[in-house]
Image: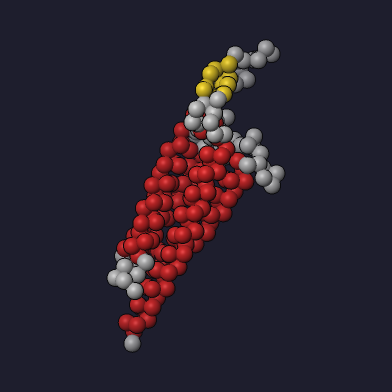
Length: 183
C-alpha cells in the first residue's frame, strides 16, 4: 500500500463532490428549489466533515460520510424519479419548493438554446390571482430541462458511489492501523 492508503483518492472525490454540490446549489437557488437547497447544504457540510476526517485520521467522521453518501444516493434517485415522473411523481407537485413559491427548475427557462419570452396572460385572468408573476413561453431548447436535472443527479450518484467505496476502504485502513498499534 502506498503512503496515501486511499486517502488521497477520497480527498480528491470529496473536493469533486463539493464542487458539484456548490454548482448545483447555485442553480437551485436561482430556481428557488428549497428542498434541494437544504439537501445540498447538508451534503456540503457532511462532505467537509468527511474530508476533515480523512485528513485528520478520524474514522468516525469518515463513517458518517459513508452513511451520508448512501442517503445522498437515495435523494438523487428521488430527484431523478421526480423529473422523469416515475412512481406517481409529477413535476407539478410542489415538493421541491415546499409549496412556498411557484418557481421550478432554473433550467426550465434557461437551458441551452432556450428562447424565453413573456406571453400575454389568458383572457379570463384576474391580476390578483398571481401577483408579480408573468406568463412565460419557452421554445427552442436543445435539451429538455428535466434531462439536465437527471444528468446532475446521475453525476452526484456516481461521485457518491465511488466516494462510498473509498470511504469504506479508508475506514478499513484506519481500523487496521489502529489495531496494529495496540500490539
